[in-house]
Image (cartoon, rainbow, N blue to C red; front, side, top):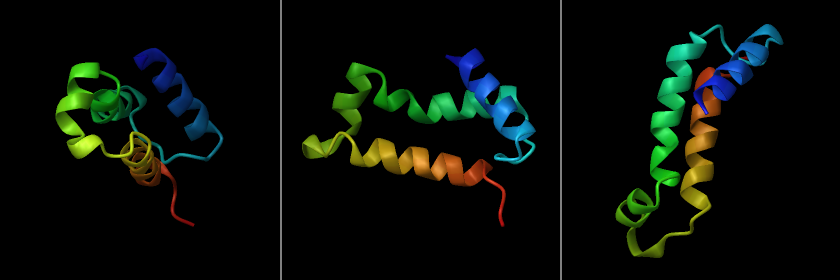
Length: 72
């Protein structure tokens, strides 16, 4: 997963779609932020009262993308 994320970051940086961040470190942070939505035990512990299983992950991904997208 990390190598795929790093490659996506490198490609996005080269295309000017992402800020010039450290792909290795940023990949690690992104995956750590999303692990709660990938691990079954963590999903059940972190999502209270059967929250919409799409809303919180989507909001997290939007936040992560905004953090590496250049301001225009």
